[in-house]
Image 1 (cartoon, chains in turn brown, orange):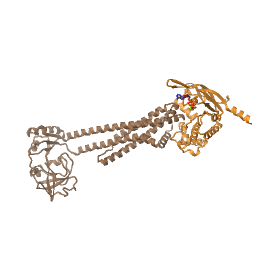
Image 2 (cartoon, each protein chain N blue to C red):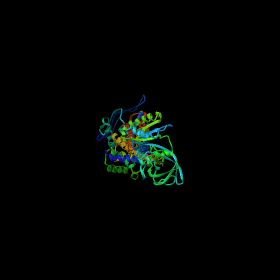
Image 3 (spheres, each protein chain N blue to C red):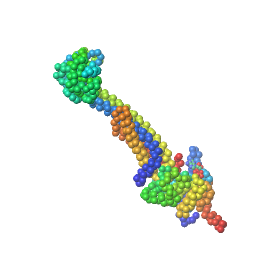
Image 4 (cartoon, rainbow over the protein chains, first blue to last red):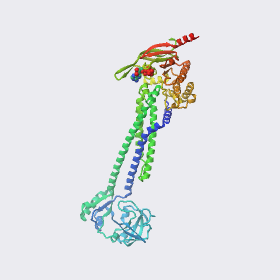
Length: 388
Length: 243
Ligand SMILES: Nc1ncnc2c1ncn2[C@@H]1O[C@H](COP(=O)(O)OP(=O)(O)OP(=O)(O)O)[C@@H](O)[C@H]1O
Ligand SMILES: [Mg+2]
């Protein structure tokens, strides 16, 4: 058998029946494209969540006091002293307060911290300097401002290093500018950071509700969390319900569990659409080959062997299935990137799922094209010819 | 008939029965005859007399229920499926009433198709297909698709395809059944020419004036052969009477 001749013949048959070939491909195209779209959008989301988790930085322990209670001012120092596993930490207080710069006035989120905060949360300094231990101990009226981008203005003006702004009517000198970073610690963009020691004079409070701690060794974190929690509950007489002590890695774990669930759901949807696509492919292939039983009868009548007929149909279904699968992949990628652009969702080229979808559909196409051809090729020529 | 000529077809007690539910239909009830090389035989009979059934068996498209069929000395019953395909390919040229061209191939490719299954090299196949196309008068239509042709032209393509591998026998089941009388004449003229060139032809018809164009007429009635007439003999007598 001259295989090249069979290939030419198959191409000829496909070309002269373009619409039939296209209809046959359609099931494949839809099946593969839908998988590519679903998986690429799904994978994109998954990647976004993972990136977000990565951005959070070092593993820290967060303490949150819910309800009406506060930790007293001296609690922070006591906790640090009592638990040797703590490397350093920072209390965290924040609230929107009135801020004035030249003639402009607005409410801005003011964050009171220990200078450790910047290192713990990996803040990037754009200009000037960060707050330091001297500022903290001496309760200096200095602040660090935050920009999503250094050029972005605050209340339409541009306070920079050296500017003096008024917070709750008290003058503060801007000593540094840091880049804005999304985190779950600070509630608003364009926040202004001051030392927690200074913050007390801006907004008298019975204490603080939030704090962050870093461990001397990441492996100590689970133990350290427990110790902090016990200490807070016992020493400061808080209700256990009010105290949450959670490490970032725990948070990370639950986020990853969500991601795993999302992935499973996506996989399920993709699997179902693959199945539906596969049934579509089977259906159209069965119909198109059954239609061609008569053609197979003609081929047998002029002397084609079973092997020749099967080979001919095999080549034809391989070409059609592969073409359909490829068109499906490109169509799917096109739709996915269009949807991603239109909705702002991230998308990710899903190489392996696309390959699986492609292979599955192409194999389904080939098998369901091949099986009826196999049956027809085994018919008596008269019986095949009689088919209409 | 002529004892010195080669026997191409030898049919002995061929029976074909079909099962239709619980009913048995005897389409052929013991048919025996021989066809010699170079003969032009027509098979006559009313509808349902078993003509097509016989032709399908002769064309190796179907198998007899009992009885033997030898083609060119080969007992068909002994052959494997692959060998049968080879016989259909090389020894038999089958012409159907409904042409049975491949709709996806053009005239040239249709005529050249049997050569593909005979593993002929491409150039040789197409060279021969052109030659056959010329023989049936389709030189100008070689790149047409079947749907662009008239019935007569399609039947010419089918004849050219049947001839392309120079078969031992040409089998035609009502080849002019779908054609008007003028086109029928043209096709019969073509058969005449093939006969003169030495082809062995078996043609089914149920029209007497078509059968009269052959040289020997086998008549069938209800699955049995009812007569075997040498038309040459009659023609000579008629000619003798006329002159
Ligand atoms: N596949 C089949 N199954 C059952 N019966 C069949 C089958 N093929 C043919 N027959 C029966 O066999 C008998 C002979 O049929 P056949 O087709 O050989 O007749 P024919 O002489 O060719 O008729 P026509 O001139 O109409 O073509 C008929 O009674 C027909 O009904
Ligand atoms: Mg018939």
